[in-house]
Length: 482
Figure 1 (cartoon, rainbow, N blue to C red):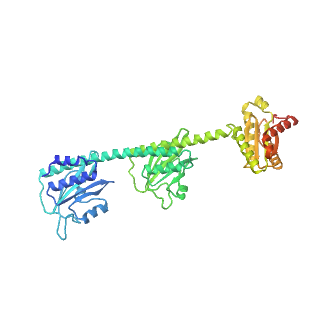
Figure 2 (figure 1 turned 90 degrees about the vertical axis):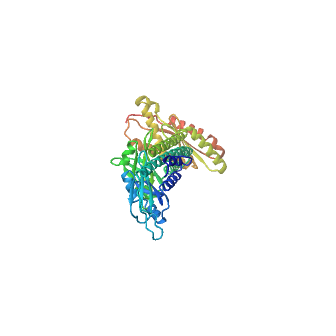
Figure 3 (figure 1 turned 45 degrees about the vertical axis):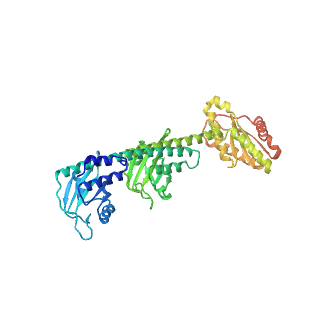
């Protein structure tokens, strides 16, 4: 007879954290202690019994269990009853038969009951009919209990190791996406790292567009599936989870996917920015997935890192915009204009050609501010900036030079071409005043100068001088009530 204490020692030693070793050691001692002809252990996986290890049974019987990923007969009875069962008679296919010999005569099976759930079943088989004493049954029951405790311990250890490993992967993923902030592929990097972290096959970055969620970027999904992924925010579990800042698991390929992109489970979590809800990130699994709370927590933590990276990228872009753009009107600022002038001057000196500058000043700004308030003056500036961008060529640079002064830099434009642009601006301003109902009108003074070669150094100053000459000569009907 085997000693339960000996079994406990054998499965809690150096190999206690190796589940395969734990099971094999326990099975060997049970088979030897009961003088049985063979045995096997099946482990619970996804609510079924799958063969984990065996001794003295036929390959046919082992294959019948392994291929079906489930056990039958005595093992299933023991798992259902929660206690040791003894089942006499033959089984098909026979576990122990060699050639035409019959067997087994009897099978004894004991459940491996863990602390929280049934872990599996230990079964031994004998070719001859035999009766098991109560002492033998108690011994098997006690051994199965100790074996289950060892397996539970090993599973817990493996869970801890896996948790630590996934935390390491989380840190690596966060570092990877942080390094990608200034690249053009931040979204793709986020999706690739999300799929790797969660052992998923595909992923998608969802964005809020009006009252629906759409796939803004995908990883491992076809363009067709990207087009099909449209989910209403209201009335859908995914939409409600996103709006509520939650995490959700969906099953069986909904919302729709194109052929070849069908998924069995999806895990999605909201991307909550300091500016509000950005959208969501989701990963797709090809097989059913038992998503646990720690999986959700891990994914939410990753999503938080992803959101920070997206926010930081947005802030960097806004900072870059602020560095070269005027904060009020949105056109380029004086610093960028001076850089562009220097670059254009070098190009003209090297390759020849001409460049033109149009210097503009808003008439009556002081009167508009004094009469209608500074918001009125700001509106005049923004209106002019918009009209200039609409009137000019794509290659032209519109900049606010300072206060109520604007400059249009026109590389490659000669005097005739620049005058056509100025005439278009005049026409656009007249149309604007005729169609926009405001108690003030927009009026500007313009100075135009074209140059090439060595004359380019004084280009801006000459256009400025001509603008002030035009301002002195024209009638000052600047800002009057409509």
